[in-house]
Each structure stands twice: as C-alpha cells, then as structure tokens.
Length: 238
Image 1 (spheres, rainbow, N blue to C red):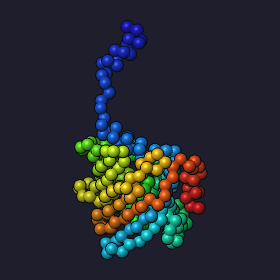
Image 2 (cartoon, one colour):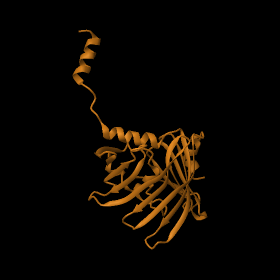
Image 3 (cartoon, helix red, strand yellow):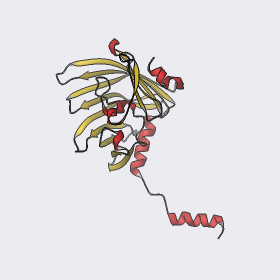
Image 4 (cartoon, rainbow, N blue to C red):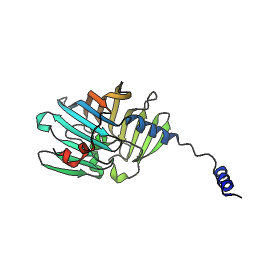
C-alpha cells in the first residue's frame, strides 16, 4: 500500500474526532470575553460590609491579547497606585505603594481579596479559563470547572453559567472541597462596545463574610494600540 493509502486507512480506522461540548463552550466563553487586540476599562467600585457601610473606589484595567493585564486603583487617594499585574497569562504580581515593593502572589493566596473589595485577586487576574480548568457540562450553558492544578487555586470547583445569546459569563460560583459556596459573581447590563458585548454591571457576593461589592463600568475602549511596556513590573510600581 502506498504512503497515501496508509494515511487514509489510518484516518478511517481512527474515526471522527470525539465531540467535546464542554470544551467547545468554554473556548467560546474565552473567545468572546477576549475579543479584540486590547482593552481599557474604568470601573466604579462600591463595597458594602456586613453592617451596611459602603466604601467607594475607582479601578482601572488594561489588557493586551490573552496574556497581559494590569489593574490599578486611582481613587481614593489613599489607595491610588495599588495595583496588580499579569504579564504572561499566569504570574500575578501585587504592588502596595505603602510597602514600596512588588511581590509575587502564588497558590491559594490568589484567592485573597483585592485590597478591601470582594474581588479575589484571581478574579481580576483571570484572562481565560481553558488553560487552568477541566470543564464538565452539567446542563446546557452550565459548566463545572475543576482546577488542573489544585495548589494554584483557592476553589475546589467553579460553576460557570453562560449566557446563551452571546456566550459571556452570566454567573460564576466558587466552592470549597466540601461543596460550600464561597463567592458568587454575577454579570449583567450587557452592552455592545466597539463591536463586542461587555457586561457593565458586576456584583460579587462574599458568602463567608456577608459582604457585597458592586462594580459598574464607567468607560470602556478597545483596540487602542496599548504598548507592551505598560505590562511590566516597572510600570506596575510607577
């Protein structure tokens, strides 16, 4: 048999590729969430503690591609400059001006709250899901995600509920190993900006601390030609 014949025979014996609806759905979520070359968002953030006391902040987020993200507080003045950097899609750096140094955040510490909000650092650092989680389809548009590396996540599992209309996340629920709900993040008020859908309202409920953080997108812009130099440790600490 010729080489071509052997190749065709091998393909016939192998049969069609196995369907992967869970993987396909997760890939669709990642694609629509990161559409465009870069992004710059300004968010108004309000955290309400268990006694009902509010605290307001302003947060800016820059992203380039699917591996670079910078997050910084710009208000109030006492928090201005506090920031977090993801330079390579995986590593997380935190900068606190009062300490004057940058430190790397590893392991379960990525689940710590980001400077008084109910966003975990891993929430703000996450650019995509597929690289870090194994998906299981629970039902239509409901994925159960298991960390590929349990030591690199604060949650034993994540339930991701996906909007049918555009494949954006609708709700994300973080659970511990005993199945207790730790944190819930809901996304709403989806509008199109520069040709892509974007949730303009985000609500984070920290179940264990009875706290809530609400974030509202004040402005959003995409494909503005952000430079790589923005996503460096030096830029983080400036």
